Length: 461
Image 1: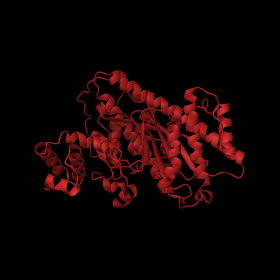
Image 2: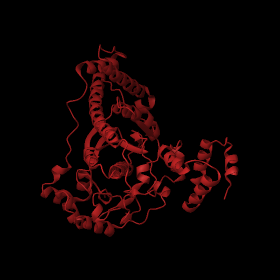
Image 3: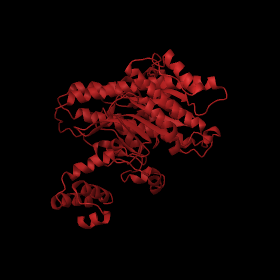
Image 4: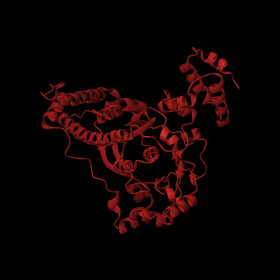
């Protein structure tokens, strides 16, 4: 085994505690599990590096892959190669465990109906239902017999979420501000309260970035050279920033930050390694817990040749990231044994997901409304104002419609971040119990880890 002294020399770093931990972390990633454990013990004992295991855990949560494209190349463009624990998909086993869960008494009519009729459909490795995710349009297109059963039994209503709140949006003054900014290049901020000035500054920033895109020759020509990473910085980032405006103490990660909740799938640390294109979160540093509330996936550039498979795969990825996040929140809440009041927050919390493809943005919500399944709902499909039309007033109207939708999403984001703050306030000073979720009856597939727990743990799929 390489000595720690030689390891430090190879990195040419000063042997401070932080430097030791950095070098240690870089090296142990190349080792197998057994070697890793031996190296942790050796370093902790002989090199007097404090809290190496804790450091490794925290560093994983903060790790950013600065060269995502190289990472994709190393995995041959297939993230499955980064996951050592995937095995062959087993449809019969998934159905068997679903049927076992159906014995639970506290299950909705819709969930029981789906489980009781699961043999009427053929599950596939990338099937959303195989992951415990219910999205009615996906069921209608891919599992038609099941859709007809749901419809016949009057359960379609359980898949309908309220639409985006139309009562929020730009005021008359704000509409005029946007119109003048686009048509005449600038406009004065009206006399408003200080908090409104913050909103106007967000508007100015968003419009400036959007107009920069309109001036781009590549966008004017609708060029296929605009790739996914460029699109992420030019369009997706301004949209994410505006959606998150006036939301405090949050972070947003782009371009291949590893999803810790997915890696911790099944209440362990051996889940698949996956990289969301973008996500926003709040962190509870006291308990080293990450609350993710907003995910985004980008399927090629806006003018790339259509790749239907990529678009569908990214929609499925969004669902899986969101499901893993809700499970992570569930396990965290349940770790506080004496705080049953926290469980209500699980059902009032929903993830927001944005799917950018072609010249569109689809808005999804996911929640726990059809327990033990995860409900995924398409809320809105938005045509993005990527180019300035020759009819300028028409472009202005399109931008105003888009901004009203983003303001509605912002309202939902604020609701969820307030829920996060309420949870954090309740658990201050509380001790977490030793309720590590049992990893029983875990079924793995060649595309993901599916888990359907025993009847006593039937809340989780």
